[in-house]
Image (cartoon, rainbow over all chains, first blue to last red; front, top):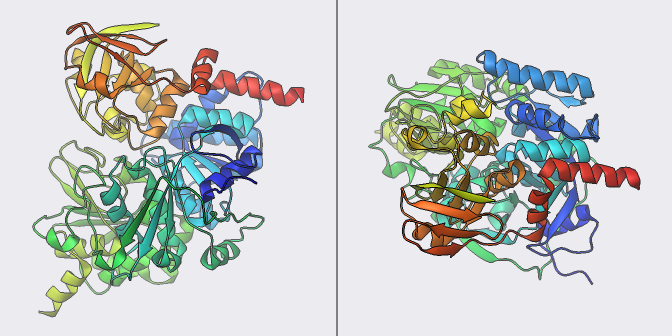
Length: 429
Length: 168
């Protein structure tokens, strides 16, 4: 009998051709998908060329290349990185290359194109590759040399991680989203609380979360240092897969007697809209409503963490019929061309523009301090992005406050950090 | 391999955004990247670092982005190795893959001050603080990772795997 295993252990064992694996084992796994963006691909392609015996990639159908970070390119240097990836894609006849205008941010694009599914192993040259755990995949971010080796071999060495299980109980309060749950979770375990670990997100609250919220939570697993974050597969997952045309996947459930490094129960009834203050995502000591003395110069709504249509709807719900505060620049960035189009169809774009927001084409842009909203000396931004490190969005003396779309939109209107209920209450007075 | 140089000491959670800020991620040349290493944490670092120096840091060194240029930038600045209480996992892999020696050694970090002269024997993980005379032992890498380094890095391992598959 194989030993009882967690979800992550089962997926890894199956992809290593083993009956079972245990935390600490170093194994080689077969990969279902290898992803890179223009930054990680540029370095990876140069490394791939150095591998003797590798002239063509292992499987042109199982590599995804997505220009996203500095696109549409902001300068000659970044245009050169994109060109390098584009040329490689043409040379290798890569099936899944998403050109500017036909893609967007990789972690929004791949799921909506049915390219990630339950039970799969996916690596990406981007730390937020953990996103795909939202549909029950084992997905992790790696550097460019790992990507180069995977381009050539279709496999990767992995140290099997121990798993920390989170059980989310209680009832979600109004305006509390997946982003608030994951910010609170990182606040509980800290930015290194999940280092080398798998995080398994379970419990009655999770079962009611839409896939978009699960992607948001899995996305930020890396901000606790985790190797991957993963959600149990349920009817919501299967409905999502059917909707995006994902077929041929395997569902793995954790064994009831699987061993966890730790089990942490989170009472969601007590969670209010969260804000992580500079300069770490774990700094969630105060709720949005307790930070109203913090004025903001900019609000960013979008990215791989919160750039899906559900996130856009949350922001629009707050911004509809309201105006962005005169001293705030509000930047809305739909995560993909599909989300962009859906925003137009649902009238969300009109709401954003009427409110005084700028609506950008899909890009990682400001999140990585790249372009489309870089901050100056002393400026503050409320942002639905994933990192508030020093200098992350620009000047070393700028500040990023992390929150979900409701809080970012409410703060854009108020001119200071503001919870959605607080904004509504102030309007009623 | 013996690493010998001055320790530059930093705190917890030194993230990849301060190791090499996003605004420089349009670069791939190690020397160019090295000119901006740790710029947002310590603007003087590149002025004071000498080839062969080591970084000594608290827990979770290299957290954040998967940008491999973080490890490359440190090497480009002349850094010979990093001693930390713990490392973030992607950075850890990137160091193994790109050949930047790293040493996990909590006691060593506590026993080294900024500016101390230190000597590290990469083969056995013995870290000597030559300023104080104290010795510390870093955690051994698992045998697989030692083999990987011995082999010359991940690309050589990939070549071996390709050859094995073709031989089947």
